[in-house]
Amino acid sequence: MVSQRILCLAMALSLTGLAQTTYAADAAAECAANASLDTRIEAVLAKADRPEGQRANDANRLSETRFVLSHIKPGDHVLDLGAGGGYESYLLSAAVCGGSVDSQNPPQWVEAFKMEPARQMLVTARPNVHLVTSDFGKVPAPAAPYDAIFIGTIYHDTYNEAGHDAVAMDKTLLSTLKPGGLVILTDHRTADGASASATNTLHRIDKAQVLSDFKAAGFELVEDSPVLANPADDHSKNVFDPSIRGHTDRMALVFRRPL
Picture (cartoon, rainbow, N blue to C red):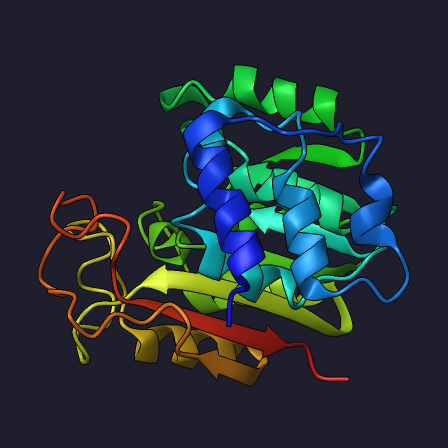
């Protein structure tokens, strides 16, 4: 359960954008030996160098943040696939402490959504973040294998790339992970049985399709969490519909490269 202390912190940050410590000064909090998950989350959210616009999402994204960071540890090398403006890249960069984060976006996203200024701000603020600009199916092999890959509500978007081959992409991701490395995935669910029919129209995907893709690529499913589920979601609505935006029924899955 999310602690009251963290929830209050996230709400305060979303309202005021105030943080009392800098990234460098408070780095010890989330990196201290035996630091609790609550302490780590509180510390990464409190970083003063995070963009104001991102802070406004902290309270709403707290369950996702908790789910993701529960699988990340200091020293990890992490790929943030489809990182967008870098919300999770900022959090991951603090959570890995002396580790590193590769923040990936396809070139067409960078151009269409004018991401480059935000990406440059990210790498200036966080020296342990490195930018990767590539198609989803052509993520380059890292110099050292990843400990974890985060795919946050964009797996359905990979289906919308021309010539996309889901299993081939997932096999590429598998090859970039160390044995035992994790893929941490969240995404908006369609109605069961919809397969990948609504990846572009509704920006949703059937959980069964995701499970099938990763199994075919050689991954093991190690966690299927209900933490982001919302049974009241109308699965026929576009995720950007104001009546459901930010409250969609989402899968929260963890896959592992076999040892």
